[in-house]
Amino acid sequence: MSDHGFAHNPVTLLHIAAYLRERSISPLEIFGRASISPSVLLADGWVSRDLCFVLGEQLAAVSGERFPGSRIGHKYKLSDLGAWGRAVVAAPSLGQACAVAVNGIGLLHQGTDLRLLTFRRHAQLRFSFRGKSGASPLQHLLGALVILRKVALLAGSPDAVSMRLSMPYARGVDALEETLGSALEFGCEHDAIVIDREIIDQPVIATNASTCSNNPAGSVAVGVMLKQLLPYGRVTIDNFAAQQRVSVRTLQRRLRDWGFSFEEIVDDIRRTEALREVLAGQHSIMEIAFLLGYSDHAHFTRAFKRWTGLPPQQYANACRR
Image (cartoon, rainbow, N blue to C red; front, top):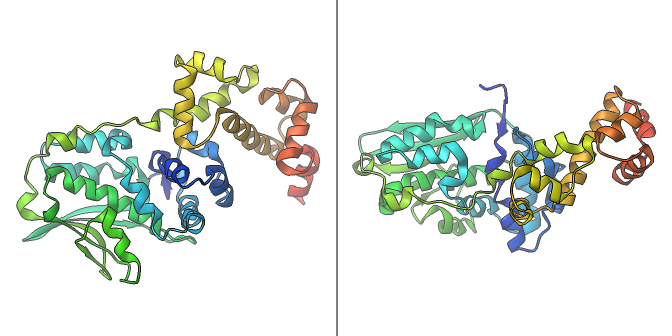
């Protein structure tokens, strides 16, 4: 297992904001309920799988939908998923595309089992999460299965693709047919995409393989870059766009894909870094204010009280107690 342990590449969460906007739900509300910092999605790193599962539970609770994970997964094109997706759609045959998907799953999920099993009449892409979590994996499981079904559909034969689900049949599960197809079998031992053997060697159809999209993943490292600029006090959207050699409009669009404004992200990065620095106790309040781009410690202290309700030193003392 990778050093990341049980974690997800943040690119696997990039369509959550679009799903929420369609339902007039604030992404900040959902991430707040799940205790996830928005800047986590814009960092050059991984998101704890437990946090992802909690996020899935909150999506279901707030949206009122039973299976929001499947709808979010349905929004993805394979090309949205970085090097993994590009390699999958570049494979010459369906069988090779499935093999690439299995071999590269570590680019998207750490702590996940994805296997390609072949039988006399069919093959299976069998998916599962390793270990246990205190939160339900259902939404992320369904989202992953929707995406894997898109891999199986690369040969252009939807009638030769079906789905086995470990979840039992219950009232309302028919809604999954919209995203997982009508060939669903419930109460199975494993969660798997089932592919008829007769199509496993068929070539990937060019119209399926060449799908492209406006990929918001280009904003994944924005959080890291903003953090590096904080000490210089130049974190305005105009300066940052110029530093990235993109227009302000392009930068705003990238951040809008995640559901946040530039100001919200800067504030969240400052909050996250402030809490870490204050608890670490390695720098004075004046030094922390400088590192976060504040003109003086008074402005920083006011911001810190807005975030936590306490001045920095009182917050640190309370946490240590």
